[in-house]
Each structure stands twice: as C-alpha cells, then as structure tokens.
Length: 305
Image (cartoon, rainbow, N blue to C red):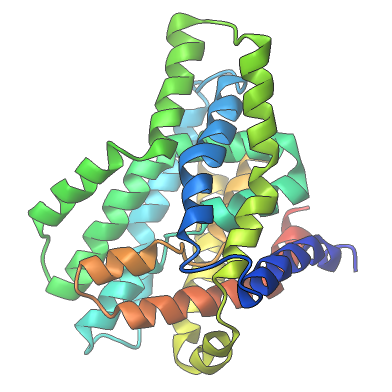
C-alpha cells in the first residue's frame, strides 16, 4: 500500500490541473504555464541542483556510458517489437518516443516525491549529461524509421534549437560558475533560486494535468500498448541492466531508472509534427503512456526501494 500512496499526490495535483482547465481557469493551449516552467522555474531548479552537486566527477563516466548506450540500443529493440514496420509515419514515432521520457513535467516531480532533494540533484546531473544526446539521437532514429535515412538539415536544426534550450544553458552555466569561477552564490540569489525551485513540482504536475485528454487515453490504448510498454517498462529495464555493467551511486541509479520509466515527453508531438510523422499517433501515445505510467510508478518504486 505504501508504494501506491507515492502516486496519490501525483493524481491529486494533476487532477487540480485537469479541473482548472475544464473550469477555464487555465485557458487556451496551456502554453503560458508551460512556458513559465520551461524558461524560468525548471532552469532555476537545475542550476541550483547542479551548482551544489559538486560538479561532474570521474565516476560519472559510467553514467555517460550507461545512458548513451541506452539511447543507442533502445531504438533497435523498439524496431523489432514495433507493429508499424509497414507504416513509416508511425514507425518513426515509435523510434522517436522509445527513449524520450517526460523528464521535466513528470520525472522531476516523481523523483522529488520519492527521493527528496538527493533525487532531484541526481536527476539534474543526469539531465546535464544527457539532454543533448537525448534530443539528437531520438530525432536521428525517428528519421531513420520514417525516411529510412538521416536528414542532416533536420539534425542541424535540432542542434540550433538545443543552443537556445534553457535547461541546457542553465546546466552549463551552473558548471561554469561552480567549477571554473568557483564563486559562492549571494544569499539573495540562492534564496530566489530556491523559491523558484520549490514551485517546480506542483506547477509541472498542474501543467501536465491541464493537458490531459481522458477520452484519448481510454480509446487509444488498444493500438498504442506496444509502444507504451517499450517506454514505461522495457526502456527502464534496459537502463537498469546497463547500470549493472557500469555501476553508479545508488541514488543516481534509482533516480535515472525512475525518470526512464516516465511517459513519452509532451514535446514529442511538436517534434513528430515538424518532421512530417504521424503526430496524431504521437499525441495519443503521450496521453496513453501518461495514464499507464501512473499505474506503473508504484511498481518501479517497489522494485527500486
């Protein structure tokens, strides 16, 4: 029962977001709330966590090995299991989504609720190391599934967008300030970042809940279940197995496996649409995997803790 209670705060706060959207307190496409999270709140959280994490040490090389090998191996597993080999527009989505976890809107809240500050610090370190590869490799494999070849223009476009990504910028800035400049944050700066960071979990879950479409979750599971299984079960199992070969600190291991078990990232819809894939299927996959992940999270908490 104690493992089930882990998801109750998630359900309640996401339910608040869903209700606010139905009552039109949160209006439109939810972009204002998501924009505030993406550009202000989450960069503050990541900057502060990495700044006080002690930087990246030699033992983090194992984390790089395990994470990037998972990015390279998982698309092949997804391809073998995919029912969409004769449908390139959906096969591309399968390969794009199999490792694109919702690290931000659900991963950080789940780890925060389960592990506290030590887990958030571990996730921030993981994001600092993995975000570039996460975006480039997922897009590359998605292209291979859809076009049967790599489109270099799209990859260069992805790199250009990454140079403006506030989460990557905050990670690099935190390392520069902590490791190169070796500065101490003024108290007022630290307290400001702390206050913004503390808002991250609740706001992320409200934003996620506001975007939920219950009807899509129920109707699409009958044909999305293979890709959902790949994302919330097979991918975290792969990450776990790689950590047996390249071990890392226990808290880092658990935090990374947990975020690997999160649903498909919400921005995957935009990526799939921009690449000409079956973006409607991507949207259904996001919705269904979000619903299923709420049921799966207690299982992963039981396994890891």
